[in-house]
Length: 598
Image 1 (spheres, one colour):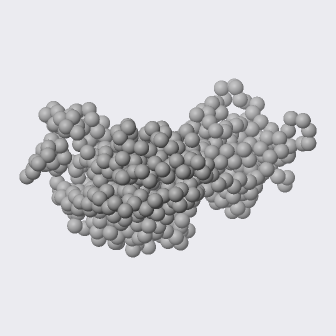
Image 2 (cartoon, helix red, strand yellow; image 1 turned 90 degrees about the horizontal axis):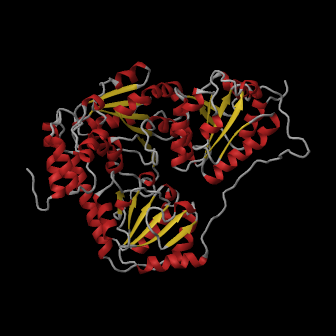
Image 3 (tube, one colour; image 1 turned 90 degrees about the vertical axis):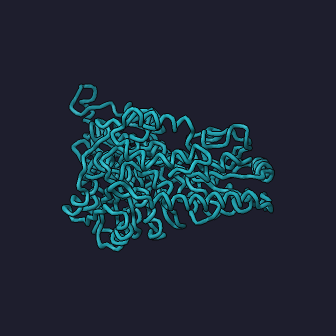
Protein backbone atom coordinates (compact mmCIF):
# COMPACT_ATOMS: atom_id res chain seq x y z
CA UNK A 1 0.00 0.00 0.00
CA UNK A 2 1.39 3.42 -0.96
CA UNK A 3 1.95 5.99 1.76
CA UNK A 4 -1.11 8.17 2.35
CA UNK A 5 -1.16 11.76 3.53
CA UNK A 6 -2.17 10.41 6.94
CA UNK A 7 0.81 8.05 6.95
CA UNK A 8 3.15 10.89 6.03
CA UNK A 9 1.72 13.08 8.80
CA UNK A 10 2.41 10.43 11.46
CA UNK A 11 5.92 9.82 10.11
CA UNK A 12 6.64 13.55 10.12
CA UNK A 13 5.35 14.04 13.66
CA UNK A 14 7.56 11.15 14.76
CA UNK A 15 10.54 12.73 13.03
CA UNK A 16 9.88 15.88 15.06
CA UNK A 17 10.00 13.84 18.28
CA UNK A 18 6.27 13.52 18.96
CA UNK A 19 5.62 10.31 20.89
CA UNK A 20 2.15 10.91 22.36
CA UNK A 21 -1.09 12.45 21.10
CA UNK A 22 -4.21 13.13 23.19
CA UNK A 23 -7.58 13.12 21.50
CA UNK A 24 -10.83 11.57 20.38
CA UNK A 25 -11.69 9.94 17.03
CA UNK A 26 -14.36 10.75 14.45
CA UNK A 27 -15.03 10.36 10.76
CA UNK A 28 -13.50 13.72 9.96
CA UNK A 29 -10.07 12.52 11.08
CA UNK A 30 -10.28 8.78 10.40
CA UNK A 31 -7.54 8.83 7.77
CA UNK A 32 -5.02 10.01 10.35
CA UNK A 33 -6.22 7.47 12.92
CA UNK A 34 -5.84 4.69 10.38
CA UNK A 35 -2.28 5.85 9.78
CA UNK A 36 -1.59 5.94 13.52
CA UNK A 37 -2.80 2.35 13.74
CA UNK A 38 -0.55 1.30 10.85
CA UNK A 39 2.44 2.97 12.52
CA UNK A 40 2.53 0.14 15.10
CA UNK A 41 2.95 2.23 18.23
CA UNK A 42 5.43 4.80 16.97
CA UNK A 43 3.15 7.39 18.54
CA UNK A 44 1.03 6.55 21.57
CA UNK A 45 -2.59 7.63 21.37
CA UNK A 46 -4.37 8.56 24.62
CA UNK A 47 -8.14 8.39 24.28
CA UNK A 48 -9.90 10.98 26.45
CA UNK A 49 -13.59 11.36 27.28
CA UNK A 50 -13.92 14.84 25.74
CA UNK A 51 -11.82 16.86 23.30
CA UNK A 52 -11.48 19.79 25.71
CA UNK A 53 -9.66 17.42 28.06
CA UNK A 54 -7.32 16.41 25.22
CA UNK A 55 -6.28 20.03 24.77
CA UNK A 56 -5.76 20.48 28.51
CA UNK A 57 -3.60 17.34 28.48
CA UNK A 58 -1.55 18.65 25.57
CA UNK A 59 -0.99 21.89 27.48
CA UNK A 60 -0.01 19.98 30.63
CA UNK A 61 2.30 17.68 28.65
CA UNK A 62 4.17 20.75 27.46
CA UNK A 63 4.33 22.13 31.01
CA UNK A 64 5.61 18.93 32.60
CA UNK A 65 8.08 17.92 29.86
CA UNK A 66 9.13 21.05 27.98
CA UNK A 67 8.15 19.25 24.77
CA UNK A 68 5.50 19.98 22.18
CA UNK A 69 2.02 18.98 23.29
CA UNK A 70 -0.23 17.53 20.57
CA UNK A 71 -4.00 17.01 20.54
CA UNK A 72 -6.26 15.70 17.80
CA UNK A 73 -9.99 15.88 17.07
CA UNK A 74 -12.48 15.34 14.31
CA UNK A 75 -14.16 18.11 12.32
CA UNK A 76 -17.01 20.33 13.52
CA UNK A 77 -17.82 19.88 17.21
CA UNK A 78 -14.68 17.85 17.83
CA UNK A 79 -12.56 20.77 16.68
CA UNK A 80 -14.59 23.38 18.53
CA UNK A 81 -14.40 21.39 21.77
CA UNK A 82 -10.61 21.86 21.78
CA UNK A 83 -10.81 25.63 22.12
CA UNK A 84 -10.84 26.08 25.91
CA UNK A 85 -7.87 23.80 26.49
CA UNK A 86 -5.97 25.48 23.68
CA UNK A 87 -6.57 28.88 25.25
CA UNK A 88 -5.11 27.49 28.45
CA UNK A 89 -1.91 26.69 26.54
CA UNK A 90 -1.90 30.04 24.79
CA UNK A 91 -2.37 32.06 27.99
CA UNK A 92 0.45 30.14 29.72
CA UNK A 93 2.83 30.30 26.72
CA UNK A 94 2.92 26.55 26.05
CA UNK A 95 3.87 25.00 22.68
CA UNK A 96 0.87 22.98 21.52
CA UNK A 97 -0.18 21.70 18.09
CA UNK A 98 -3.85 20.98 17.42
CA UNK A 99 -4.67 18.67 14.51
CA UNK A 100 -8.26 18.48 13.32
CA UNK A 101 -10.26 17.03 10.49
CA UNK A 102 -12.50 18.94 8.09
CA UNK A 103 -15.22 17.99 5.65
CA UNK A 104 -14.28 16.93 2.10
CA UNK A 105 -12.82 19.71 -0.03
CA UNK A 106 -15.59 19.49 -2.64
CA UNK A 107 -18.25 20.14 0.01
CA UNK A 108 -16.66 23.20 1.61
CA UNK A 109 -18.76 26.29 1.27
CA UNK A 110 -21.90 24.18 0.85
CA UNK A 111 -23.26 24.45 4.41
CA UNK A 112 -22.37 20.78 4.79
CA UNK A 113 -22.90 18.79 7.97
CA UNK A 114 -20.18 19.57 10.54
CA UNK A 115 -18.65 22.14 8.23
CA UNK A 116 -17.21 24.98 10.32
CA UNK A 117 -14.83 27.68 9.08
CA UNK A 118 -12.02 26.24 11.18
CA UNK A 119 -9.24 28.57 10.04
CA UNK A 120 -11.29 31.52 11.23
CA UNK A 121 -12.31 29.71 14.42
CA UNK A 122 -8.69 28.94 15.37
CA UNK A 123 -7.32 32.29 14.20
CA UNK A 124 -7.16 33.84 17.65
CA UNK A 125 -6.08 30.92 19.82
CA UNK A 126 -3.65 29.61 17.18
CA UNK A 127 -2.88 32.92 15.53
CA UNK A 128 0.85 32.21 15.40
CA UNK A 129 0.13 29.64 12.67
CA UNK A 130 -3.07 28.01 11.47
CA UNK A 131 -3.55 26.52 8.02
CA UNK A 132 -5.84 24.13 6.15
CA UNK A 133 -4.22 21.78 3.66
CA UNK A 134 -5.58 21.60 0.12
CA UNK A 135 -3.18 19.21 -1.65
CA UNK A 136 -0.79 16.46 -0.46
CA UNK A 137 2.36 18.42 -1.33
CA UNK A 138 1.40 21.11 1.19
CA UNK A 139 1.36 18.86 4.23
CA UNK A 140 5.11 18.62 4.65
CA UNK A 141 5.75 22.33 5.08
CA UNK A 142 2.53 22.89 7.05
CA UNK A 143 3.61 20.32 9.65
CA UNK A 144 7.17 21.63 9.79
CA UNK A 145 6.12 25.25 10.10
CA UNK A 146 3.39 24.56 12.67
CA UNK A 147 5.75 22.63 14.96
CA UNK A 148 8.73 24.97 14.57
CA UNK A 149 6.53 27.99 15.28
CA UNK A 150 4.95 26.38 18.33
CA UNK A 151 8.34 25.44 19.79
CA UNK A 152 10.21 28.63 18.96
CA UNK A 153 7.48 31.08 19.94
CA UNK A 154 5.94 28.93 22.72
CA UNK A 155 2.51 29.30 21.17
CA UNK A 156 -0.46 27.27 19.94
CA UNK A 157 -0.62 26.30 16.27
CA UNK A 158 -3.27 24.39 14.32
CA UNK A 159 -3.30 22.12 11.27
CA UNK A 160 -6.60 21.31 9.51
CA UNK A 161 -6.89 18.32 7.16
CA UNK A 162 -10.00 17.72 4.99
CA UNK A 163 -11.07 14.10 5.38
CA UNK A 164 -10.72 13.19 1.69
CA UNK A 165 -7.17 14.54 1.63
CA UNK A 166 -6.02 12.26 4.46
CA UNK A 167 -6.45 9.07 2.38
CA UNK A 168 -4.86 10.37 -0.84
CA UNK A 169 -1.43 9.04 -1.84
CA UNK A 170 1.21 11.33 -0.43
CA UNK A 171 3.24 13.30 -2.97
CA UNK A 172 6.13 15.50 -1.96
CA UNK A 173 6.58 18.95 -3.45
CA UNK A 174 7.98 18.98 -6.99
CA UNK A 175 11.06 20.91 -8.00
CA UNK A 176 9.27 23.79 -9.65
CA UNK A 177 8.15 27.32 -9.08
CA UNK A 178 5.42 27.67 -6.46
CA UNK A 179 6.51 24.78 -4.23
CA UNK A 180 7.94 24.79 -0.72
CA UNK A 181 10.67 22.41 0.48
CA UNK A 182 10.87 22.42 4.28
CA UNK A 183 12.88 20.42 6.80
CA UNK A 184 12.72 19.02 10.32
CA UNK A 185 14.49 20.38 13.37
CA UNK A 186 14.62 23.10 15.98
CA UNK A 187 16.99 23.80 18.84
CA UNK A 188 16.38 26.64 21.25
CA UNK A 189 19.11 29.31 21.07
CA UNK A 190 21.06 30.75 23.97
CA UNK A 191 19.44 34.10 24.68
CA UNK A 192 21.40 36.39 26.97
CA UNK A 193 21.11 40.20 27.27
CA UNK A 194 23.92 42.50 26.18
CA UNK A 195 26.77 43.05 28.67
CA UNK A 196 25.82 46.71 29.05
CA UNK A 197 22.28 45.80 30.07
CA UNK A 198 23.54 43.20 32.56
CA UNK A 199 25.79 45.83 34.15
CA UNK A 200 22.90 48.28 34.42
CA UNK A 201 20.74 45.59 36.05
CA UNK A 202 23.51 44.78 38.52
CA UNK A 203 23.88 48.46 39.44
CA UNK A 204 20.17 48.68 40.29
CA UNK A 205 20.16 45.45 42.30
CA UNK A 206 23.41 46.23 44.13
CA UNK A 207 22.04 49.63 45.17
CA UNK A 208 18.91 48.12 46.70
CA UNK A 209 18.73 47.76 50.47
CA UNK A 210 15.42 45.84 50.52
CA UNK A 211 15.26 43.59 47.46
CA UNK A 212 12.21 41.48 46.61
CA UNK A 213 12.19 38.78 43.95
CA UNK A 214 9.11 37.47 42.13
CA UNK A 215 9.45 34.23 40.15
CA UNK A 216 7.04 32.63 37.70
CA UNK A 217 6.97 29.68 35.33
CA UNK A 218 10.00 31.05 33.50
CA UNK A 219 12.11 30.36 36.59
CA UNK A 220 11.11 26.70 37.05
CA UNK A 221 14.43 25.48 35.64
CA UNK A 222 16.50 28.18 37.38
CA UNK A 223 16.21 26.98 40.98
CA UNK A 224 19.95 27.05 41.72
CA UNK A 225 20.41 30.41 40.04
CA UNK A 226 17.47 32.03 41.85
CA UNK A 227 18.74 30.71 45.19
CA UNK A 228 22.21 32.06 44.46
CA UNK A 229 21.05 35.56 43.54
CA UNK A 230 18.54 35.71 46.41
CA UNK A 231 21.23 34.81 48.94
CA UNK A 232 23.67 37.32 47.46
CA UNK A 233 21.08 40.09 47.52
CA UNK A 234 19.64 39.15 50.92
CA UNK A 235 16.28 39.09 49.11
CA UNK A 236 12.97 37.45 49.80
CA UNK A 237 11.34 35.41 47.03
CA UNK A 238 7.61 35.40 46.30
CA UNK A 239 6.14 32.95 43.81
CA UNK A 240 3.42 33.43 41.21
CA UNK A 241 1.18 30.35 41.03
CA UNK A 242 2.83 28.99 37.88
CA UNK A 243 6.20 29.36 39.59
CA UNK A 244 5.20 27.56 42.78
CA UNK A 245 7.71 24.75 42.22
CA UNK A 246 10.58 27.09 41.30
CA UNK A 247 11.85 27.19 44.90
CA UNK A 248 11.19 24.89 47.86
CA UNK A 249 9.18 26.35 50.72
CA UNK A 250 11.64 25.26 53.40
CA UNK A 251 13.95 28.15 52.53
CA UNK A 252 13.40 30.84 55.19
CA UNK A 253 13.35 33.69 52.65
CA UNK A 254 10.70 32.12 50.41
CA UNK A 255 7.51 34.00 51.24
CA UNK A 256 5.17 31.78 49.23
CA UNK A 257 2.50 32.71 46.75
CA UNK A 258 1.51 36.24 45.77
CA UNK A 259 -1.81 37.85 44.89
CA UNK A 260 -5.38 37.14 45.91
CA UNK A 261 -4.39 33.56 46.66
CA UNK A 262 -1.12 34.66 48.18
CA UNK A 263 0.46 35.02 51.59
CA UNK A 264 0.81 37.85 54.06
CA UNK A 265 4.65 37.85 53.98
CA UNK A 266 4.59 38.20 50.18
CA UNK A 267 2.19 41.14 50.55
CA UNK A 268 4.30 42.77 53.28
CA UNK A 269 7.52 42.27 51.32
CA UNK A 270 6.16 43.86 48.16
CA UNK A 271 4.89 46.86 50.11
CA UNK A 272 8.19 47.33 51.95
CA UNK A 273 10.84 46.66 49.29
CA UNK A 274 12.86 49.32 47.49
CA UNK A 275 13.92 47.07 44.58
CA UNK A 276 12.00 44.42 42.61
CA UNK A 277 13.54 41.67 40.49
CA UNK A 278 10.94 39.80 38.42
CA UNK A 279 12.01 36.55 36.76
CA UNK A 280 9.90 34.76 34.15
CA UNK A 281 6.52 35.90 35.43
CA UNK A 282 3.44 37.49 33.89
CA UNK A 283 1.70 37.81 37.28
CA UNK A 284 -1.31 40.01 36.42
CA UNK A 285 -2.35 41.80 39.61
CA UNK A 286 -0.40 45.04 39.86
CA UNK A 287 -2.03 45.97 43.17
CA UNK A 288 0.06 43.25 44.83
CA UNK A 289 3.33 44.63 43.46
CA UNK A 290 5.12 47.69 44.89
CA UNK A 291 3.35 51.01 44.44
CA UNK A 292 4.53 52.60 41.20
CA UNK A 293 7.64 54.66 41.92
CA UNK A 294 8.25 53.06 45.31
CA UNK A 295 10.78 50.54 44.02
CA UNK A 296 13.35 50.32 41.25
CA UNK A 297 12.81 47.34 38.96
CA UNK A 298 14.65 44.75 36.89
CA UNK A 299 12.82 42.12 34.86
CA UNK A 300 14.00 39.01 33.01
CA UNK A 301 11.78 37.39 30.39
CA UNK A 302 12.18 35.52 27.12
CA UNK A 303 9.36 37.52 25.55
CA UNK A 304 9.88 41.23 25.10
CA UNK A 305 6.14 41.91 25.06
CA UNK A 306 5.92 40.77 28.71
CA UNK A 307 8.55 43.25 29.92
CA UNK A 308 7.46 46.32 31.92
CA UNK A 309 3.87 45.19 31.46
CA UNK A 310 2.91 44.81 35.14
CA UNK A 311 5.38 47.27 36.67
CA UNK A 312 7.49 50.01 35.03
CA UNK A 313 10.95 48.48 35.11
CA UNK A 314 14.18 50.45 35.03
CA UNK A 315 16.09 47.65 33.28
CA UNK A 316 14.46 45.09 30.98
CA UNK A 317 16.45 41.97 30.13
CA UNK A 318 15.35 39.75 27.26
CA UNK A 319 16.81 36.35 27.94
CA UNK A 320 16.52 32.82 29.23
CA UNK A 321 16.28 32.91 33.03
CA UNK A 322 19.05 30.35 33.67
CA UNK A 323 21.53 31.82 31.24
CA UNK A 324 20.73 35.42 32.15
CA UNK A 325 21.08 34.81 35.90
CA UNK A 326 24.35 32.95 35.33
CA UNK A 327 25.68 35.97 33.44
CA UNK A 328 24.34 38.40 36.03
CA UNK A 329 25.54 36.63 39.19
CA UNK A 330 29.26 37.56 38.91
CA UNK A 331 28.21 41.22 38.83
CA UNK A 332 26.13 41.02 42.02
CA UNK A 333 27.72 42.11 45.29
CA UNK A 334 27.18 40.13 48.47
CA UNK A 335 24.89 42.04 50.85
CA UNK A 336 26.18 42.28 54.42
CA UNK A 337 23.22 44.01 56.04
CA UNK A 338 20.89 41.48 57.68
CA UNK A 339 17.96 43.57 58.89
CA UNK A 340 15.88 43.04 55.73
CA UNK A 341 16.36 39.26 55.44
CA UNK A 342 15.63 38.91 59.15
CA UNK A 343 12.33 40.77 58.68
CA UNK A 344 11.38 38.46 55.83
CA UNK A 345 12.28 35.36 57.82
CA UNK A 346 10.19 36.58 60.78
CA UNK A 347 7.19 37.35 58.56
CA UNK A 348 7.45 33.92 56.92
CA UNK A 349 7.85 32.00 60.18
CA UNK A 350 4.84 33.77 61.69
CA UNK A 351 2.80 33.08 58.56
CA UNK A 352 3.41 29.32 58.66
CA UNK A 353 2.36 29.39 62.30
CA UNK A 354 -0.81 31.25 61.31
CA UNK A 355 -1.59 28.70 58.62
CA UNK A 356 -1.09 25.89 61.12
CA UNK A 357 -3.63 27.47 63.45
CA UNK A 358 -6.10 28.14 60.63
CA UNK A 359 -5.82 24.57 59.37
CA UNK A 360 -6.68 23.21 62.80
CA UNK A 361 -9.80 25.29 63.30
CA UNK A 362 -12.71 22.87 63.45
CA UNK A 363 -15.26 22.98 60.65
CA UNK A 364 -19.00 22.95 61.27
CA UNK A 365 -19.95 19.26 60.99
CA UNK A 366 -17.42 18.97 58.14
CA UNK A 367 -13.68 19.13 57.46
CA UNK A 368 -11.86 22.46 57.37
CA UNK A 369 -10.59 22.42 53.73
CA UNK A 370 -7.30 24.02 54.74
CA UNK A 371 -6.56 20.93 56.83
CA UNK A 372 -6.62 18.68 53.76
CA UNK A 373 -3.60 20.30 52.10
CA UNK A 374 -1.85 21.01 55.40
CA UNK A 375 -1.88 17.29 56.20
CA UNK A 376 -0.64 16.47 52.69
CA UNK A 377 2.38 18.77 53.01
CA UNK A 378 4.08 16.72 55.71
CA UNK A 379 3.50 13.46 53.84
CA UNK A 380 4.00 14.29 50.17
CA UNK A 381 6.88 12.48 48.43
CA UNK A 382 9.65 14.83 47.19
CA UNK A 383 9.19 13.66 43.60
CA UNK A 384 5.42 14.18 43.53
CA UNK A 385 3.57 16.15 40.88
CA UNK A 386 0.61 18.23 42.10
CA UNK A 387 -2.11 19.84 40.02
CA UNK A 388 -4.89 22.09 41.23
CA UNK A 389 -8.17 23.20 39.79
CA UNK A 390 -9.45 26.76 39.87
CA UNK A 391 -11.82 27.68 42.65
CA UNK A 392 -11.44 27.68 46.41
CA UNK A 393 -9.18 24.60 46.32
CA UNK A 394 -6.58 26.76 44.58
CA UNK A 395 -6.38 28.90 47.73
CA UNK A 396 -5.30 25.95 49.84
CA UNK A 397 -2.95 24.72 47.11
CA UNK A 398 -1.38 28.19 46.85
CA UNK A 399 -0.96 28.82 50.57
CA UNK A 400 -0.86 25.52 52.46
CA UNK A 401 1.06 23.19 50.16
CA UNK A 402 4.73 23.18 51.14
CA UNK A 403 6.68 22.46 47.99
CA UNK A 404 9.81 20.34 48.31
CA UNK A 405 12.75 20.51 45.95
CA UNK A 406 12.19 18.13 43.04
CA UNK A 407 8.42 18.43 43.04
CA UNK A 408 6.47 19.68 40.03
CA UNK A 409 3.23 21.66 40.26
CA UNK A 410 0.88 23.43 37.90
CA UNK A 411 -2.63 24.62 37.19
CA UNK A 412 -4.50 26.69 34.63
CA UNK A 413 -2.75 30.01 35.20
CA UNK A 414 -3.59 32.77 32.76
CA UNK A 415 -6.95 31.30 31.79
CA UNK A 416 -7.77 30.09 35.33
CA UNK A 417 -10.20 27.60 33.85
CA UNK A 418 -12.25 25.17 35.87
CA UNK A 419 -11.81 21.54 34.96
CA UNK A 420 -8.06 21.41 34.31
CA UNK A 421 -6.74 19.56 37.37
CA UNK A 422 -7.66 15.98 36.44
CA UNK A 423 -6.57 16.17 32.76
CA UNK A 424 -3.38 17.88 33.92
CA UNK A 425 -2.77 15.04 36.37
CA UNK A 426 -3.42 12.41 33.69
CA UNK A 427 -0.97 14.06 31.31
CA UNK A 428 1.57 14.33 34.14
CA UNK A 429 1.27 10.60 34.81
CA UNK A 430 1.76 9.70 31.15
CA UNK A 431 4.82 11.95 31.00
CA UNK A 432 6.24 10.66 34.31
CA UNK A 433 4.68 7.24 35.00
CA UNK A 434 7.18 6.56 37.80
CA UNK A 435 6.17 9.57 39.90
CA UNK A 436 3.18 9.96 42.25
CA UNK A 437 0.63 12.46 40.95
CA UNK A 438 -1.98 14.30 43.02
CA UNK A 439 -4.90 16.41 41.75
CA UNK A 440 -6.72 18.84 44.05
CA UNK A 441 -10.27 19.45 42.80
CA UNK A 442 -13.48 21.14 43.93
CA UNK A 443 -16.84 19.48 43.46
CA UNK A 444 -17.89 22.10 40.88
CA UNK A 445 -15.03 21.22 38.53
CA UNK A 446 -15.49 17.55 39.30
CA UNK A 447 -19.10 17.65 38.13
CA UNK A 448 -18.32 19.90 35.17
CA UNK A 449 -15.92 17.54 33.38
CA UNK A 450 -13.33 15.95 35.67
CA UNK A 451 -15.48 13.05 36.86
CA UNK A 452 -15.69 11.54 33.39
CA UNK A 453 -11.91 11.62 33.05
CA UNK A 454 -11.63 9.24 35.99
CA UNK A 455 -12.76 6.70 33.41
CA UNK A 456 -9.62 7.58 31.42
CA UNK A 457 -7.58 6.84 34.53
CA UNK A 458 -9.38 3.50 34.92
CA UNK A 459 -8.61 2.68 31.28
CA UNK A 460 -4.86 3.32 31.45
CA UNK A 461 -3.54 3.09 35.03
CA UNK A 462 -2.29 -0.49 34.80
CA UNK A 463 0.28 0.64 32.22
CA UNK A 464 1.89 3.10 34.69
CA UNK A 465 5.01 1.83 36.47
CA UNK A 466 3.93 3.56 39.69
CA UNK A 467 0.16 3.26 40.22
CA UNK A 468 -0.05 6.19 42.66
CA UNK A 469 -2.47 8.69 41.14
CA UNK A 470 -4.67 10.51 43.66
CA UNK A 471 -7.58 12.87 43.16
CA UNK A 472 -8.82 14.69 46.24
CA UNK A 473 -12.32 16.17 45.85
CA UNK A 474 -13.60 18.85 48.23
CA UNK A 475 -17.30 18.10 48.44
CA UNK A 476 -18.99 21.18 49.94
CA UNK A 477 -22.06 21.26 47.62
CA UNK A 478 -21.17 24.86 46.76
CA UNK A 479 -19.43 26.75 43.97
CA UNK A 480 -17.41 28.11 46.82
CA UNK A 481 -14.98 30.59 45.29
CA UNK A 482 -17.77 32.43 43.50
CA UNK A 483 -19.93 32.39 46.64
CA UNK A 484 -17.18 34.20 48.53
CA UNK A 485 -16.62 36.59 45.62
CA UNK A 486 -20.33 37.45 45.71
CA UNK A 487 -20.07 38.22 49.41
CA UNK A 488 -16.75 40.07 49.54
CA UNK A 489 -16.65 41.81 46.15
CA UNK A 490 -20.30 42.45 45.33
CA UNK A 491 -21.80 42.75 48.82
CA UNK A 492 -24.42 40.17 47.90
CA UNK A 493 -25.48 37.19 50.00
CA UNK A 494 -25.01 33.70 48.62
CA UNK A 495 -27.39 33.10 45.70
CA UNK A 496 -28.42 29.51 46.32
CA UNK A 497 -29.95 29.00 42.87
CA UNK A 498 -26.58 29.59 41.22
CA UNK A 499 -24.26 28.30 43.94
CA UNK A 500 -25.73 25.11 45.39
CA UNK A 501 -24.76 21.92 43.56
CA UNK A 502 -25.73 18.30 44.24
CA UNK A 503 -23.70 16.20 46.62
CA UNK A 504 -22.32 13.25 44.67
CA UNK A 505 -20.63 10.15 46.18
CA UNK A 506 -17.36 10.55 44.28
CA UNK A 507 -15.59 7.85 46.30
CA UNK A 508 -18.30 5.37 45.36
CA UNK A 509 -17.93 6.23 41.68
CA UNK A 510 -14.22 5.50 42.03
CA UNK A 511 -14.96 2.10 43.55
CA UNK A 512 -17.48 1.36 40.82
CA UNK A 513 -14.95 1.85 38.00
CA UNK A 514 -12.16 -0.14 39.62
CA UNK A 515 -10.29 2.60 41.46
CA UNK A 516 -10.14 2.97 45.25
CA UNK A 517 -12.46 5.39 47.02
CA UNK A 518 -11.84 6.95 50.43
CA UNK A 519 -14.40 9.09 52.27
CA UNK A 520 -13.35 11.58 54.95
CA UNK A 521 -15.77 13.56 57.12
CA UNK A 522 -13.51 13.91 60.16
CA UNK A 523 -10.45 16.17 60.01
CA UNK A 524 -8.56 13.90 62.41
CA UNK A 525 -8.69 11.15 59.76
CA UNK A 526 -7.27 13.33 56.98
CA UNK A 527 -3.64 12.37 57.59
CA UNK A 528 -4.50 8.67 57.60
CA UNK A 529 -6.40 9.11 54.32
CA UNK A 530 -3.33 10.59 52.61
CA UNK A 531 -1.11 7.81 53.95
CA UNK A 532 -3.52 5.15 52.75
CA UNK A 533 -3.78 6.75 49.30
CA UNK A 534 -0.01 7.12 48.96
CA UNK A 535 0.43 3.44 49.82
CA UNK A 536 -2.36 2.18 47.54
CA UNK A 537 -1.75 -0.22 44.67
CA UNK A 538 -4.16 1.62 42.37
CA UNK A 539 -5.42 5.17 41.74
CA UNK A 540 -7.44 6.67 44.58
CA UNK A 541 -10.21 9.24 44.88
CA UNK A 542 -10.36 10.90 48.31
CA UNK A 543 -13.72 12.54 48.86
CA UNK A 544 -13.67 15.08 51.68
CA UNK A 545 -16.88 16.42 53.19
CA UNK A 546 -15.66 20.01 53.38
CA UNK A 547 -17.02 23.02 55.24
CA UNK A 548 -18.07 25.67 52.67
CA UNK A 549 -18.00 28.45 55.27
CA UNK A 550 -14.24 28.54 55.85
CA UNK A 551 -13.32 31.73 54.02
CA UNK A 552 -10.45 31.72 51.49
CA UNK A 553 -9.13 34.97 52.95
CA UNK A 554 -6.81 37.13 50.81
CA UNK A 555 -3.42 38.11 52.31
CA UNK A 556 -4.67 41.62 53.05
CA UNK A 557 -8.25 42.65 53.75
CA UNK A 558 -9.16 46.29 53.25
CA UNK A 559 -11.74 48.09 55.32
CA UNK A 560 -13.83 48.44 52.15
CA UNK A 561 -13.79 44.65 51.62
CA UNK A 562 -14.79 44.06 55.23
CA UNK A 563 -17.68 46.50 54.86
CA UNK A 564 -18.83 44.80 51.66
CA UNK A 565 -18.73 41.43 53.40
CA UNK A 566 -20.71 42.84 56.33
CA UNK A 567 -23.32 44.23 53.92
CA UNK A 568 -23.75 40.78 52.35
CA UNK A 569 -24.40 39.30 55.80
CA UNK A 570 -26.86 42.05 56.65
CA UNK A 571 -28.85 41.22 53.51
CA UNK A 572 -29.60 37.77 54.89
CA UNK A 573 -27.07 35.21 53.68
CA UNK A 574 -28.53 31.68 53.94
CA UNK A 575 -25.35 30.51 55.71
CA UNK A 576 -25.01 33.65 57.83
CA UNK A 577 -24.68 31.92 61.19
CA UNK A 578 -21.89 29.55 60.18
CA UNK A 579 -20.10 32.19 58.11
CA UNK A 580 -20.08 34.62 61.04
CA UNK A 581 -18.68 31.99 63.40
CA UNK A 582 -16.00 30.74 61.02
CA UNK A 583 -14.96 34.00 59.39
CA UNK A 584 -15.78 37.17 61.27
CA UNK A 585 -12.93 36.88 63.77
CA UNK A 586 -10.30 36.47 61.04
CA UNK A 587 -11.72 39.40 59.06
CA UNK A 588 -11.82 41.67 62.11
CA UNK A 589 -8.32 40.69 63.19
CA UNK A 590 -7.07 41.58 59.73
CA UNK A 591 -8.64 45.03 59.41
CA UNK A 592 -8.87 46.34 62.99
CA UNK A 593 -5.43 46.76 64.59
CA UNK A 594 -5.31 45.46 68.11
CA UNK A 595 -8.66 43.67 67.86
CA UNK A 596 -8.70 40.35 69.69
CA UNK A 597 -11.82 38.52 68.63
CA UNK A 598 -13.09 35.74 70.82
